[in-house]
Image (cartoon, rainbow, N blue to C red; front, side, top):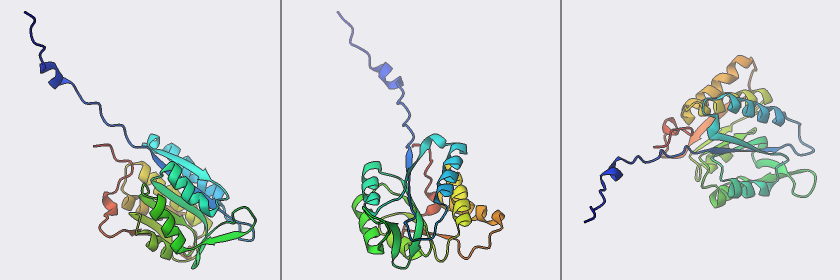
Length: 220
């Protein structure tokens, strides 16, 4: 008589560990003609170099989109499903300045339009960095859809934006929380010696604790 197959061995089988999540950082750069030229390329390069130095560099991918037009935000969020959206360019009370679609000049994307875009296609986004002047009002509006948003209530200097990005993404990549990475971003601004008119501010959605949000966390 054939013996029944024992299931004892099945109990010893080990479940393969979950693969870590790879986070996409979508960098949208916009410096339309007719606006003051800002060093967007240096900011993007600084982020890329910092991501290559971090301990958990395999968990982040920087995707850059230059001369960003308004619909690029919606298209790229839908296609890439990024964890972080980083807008680098000009801001003001009326909105953020993108390249005019199909032509020269600037097209201002209003706060309401930004909010609608994130509500429609930004479900994957956990963090938004608005590296632009006078962007706190837009940052606060995005908290309806995003856990953490960084904005600036005043004029944002190129050097401040670049150094903040280095500290912030360096912290995120070394398994620091968003709150700790933000502090590191602010600390990175100080050694530059730049007399900043304004510095980035971190805002969080009600009920969200930025000190517990770790983008490079190990999978449970």
